[in-house]
Image (cartoon, rainbow, N blue to C red; front, side, top):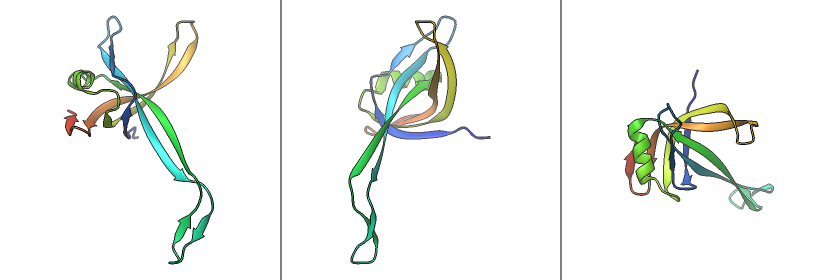
Length: 126
């Protein structure tokens, strides 16, 4: 079996570090990834190649990233900032939690194992 995620995107807000009593701290941030595509019909252009006419559509997906590894967690908290473009490798985790109104909720999180800060060429990995 394999559980591996690779994401390249921009950080949505400065990371926060949280610690639940009796557990190790975790650094958490959101990461936006974008998909772009052209809508409309395919046509053949003068060279006989396929060309697409239509509008360009875009979808942004937000991912919750959690960093537990001690060295990576601390470097992420210190150096990753809102707007940073980073590459994250990790695994996807599905969990449940109880919110402040005592309602059970589902949460999807990417548990980061490696990160690369692409803008400053700062490697945030093991």
